[in-house]
Length: 106
Image (cartoon, rainbow, N blue to C red):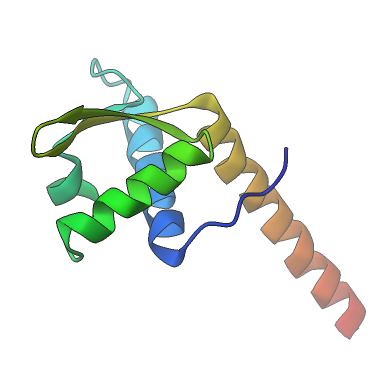
């Protein structure tokens, strides 16, 4: 899987979507695990709607989410398996990088 270039906002958003997915999964939620509504207020309340929309579009272009639109913006977003795998593989790679760095310092 090729690593796409993501902005900081897009990386933060992907992490938040993944964390929400994991929380639902771990809680045995009856909600769809990967379908999210109220996306602006829930996942990116600290940025403008335009900036949040750009981050969601970036994730969609990378194949990590599918966004469904209404006249006033994104209505729902679905975290796709590729997005889940990207976060999980990134976490594993980060751990490997830390271990390698610590090993080299010895």
